[in-house]
Amino acid sequence: MSRSKTKAPVVTLAPEQERAALDTLKRFLEDRFELTLGSFEVAEVLDVFSKEIAPHYYNRAIADVQLHLKERFDSIESDLWALEKP
Image 1 (spheres, rainbow, N blue to C red):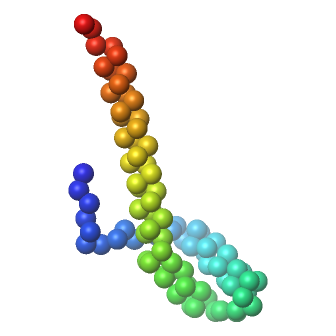
Image 2 (image 1 turned 120 degrees about the vertical axis):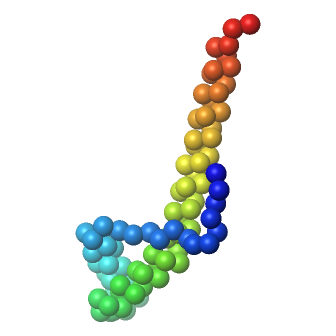
């Protein structure tokens, strides 16, 4: 399995998920930091998270799935060896 280092995956959301994320982020910034941003500014912050931070979580999830699948395949291989006739 090859890994391309040229471009990080772009994480995108469905429109309704993006609206919910924008609302959550706007509310968080207002509640936690008393920072009131307009829709454009909140969208810019979300865009930075999407492009710069989310790919790290995405890649971690991929690595976790790869490990899980490797363990499952190893287990299946072991089960097959156990079925082999002498």
